Length: 163
Image (cartoon, rainbow, N blue to C red; front, top):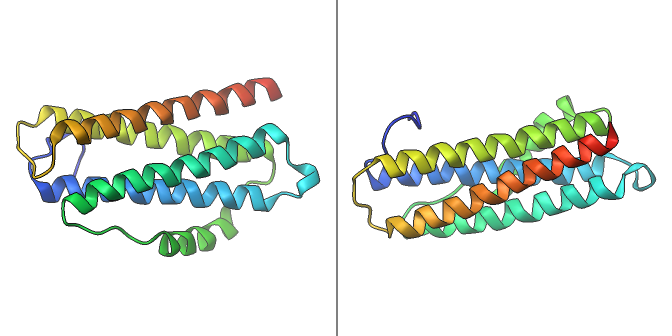
């Protein structure tokens, strides 16, 4: 489903929220893999803090999305399954330095922000009623989107300091 469309059914809403949960699982897993990929001596404290915060925030976002999904009587993909997929892909695409790591994290944050922005727009464009409170869904998504925007700003600030 394109996010350019309106969200018209509980099923569509659940599927889009499931996509958001998987996106958060990928961001969380990649952040932890980035932390583990560099020696303790070679990790800049700002970068380590950024990645730890990103992973924790993604886990919290995933929990919030899973609660909405559960309210729609749907299920999510377990984190462990996504982590295995990330591990398999990560072995092939591991950033070689902090600049690559920061660029990857920036892309993750921007992708998440854009996804939530589009999802909010698609829900707002819809006049459909859902089995869960529409305002609660929108409030949750807006809060998550704002946190993703802050993540973009944090990564950008670290990148600028390192330049």
